Length: 111
Image: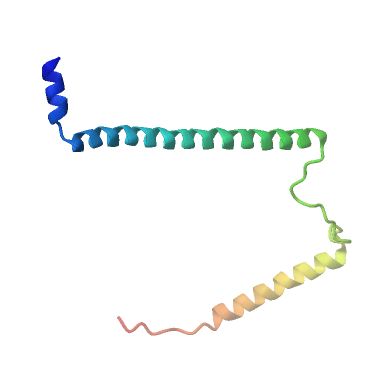
């Protein structure tokens, strides 16, 4: 007992501060873990809540992420529109053939 008191009196204040530093580091680490876990659980609850509302809307048939805007006449296939489309591809084919036949030959300076 006497020897223990003797050791305590002669130990420097730095070692006591070091012990306090270790304890404060442990408290700080626990504090950060607590923040991390709290954030995780809060985000989990938010995701589960949003998922519940989306599933509920889907089961009711009211959930549609894209607004259904119908352009008048866009879905109708007519003979005039098909002929216009075919003529467009015909002009593209003719233009491609002309470019392919009249392409310029580039001289490669490395050869």
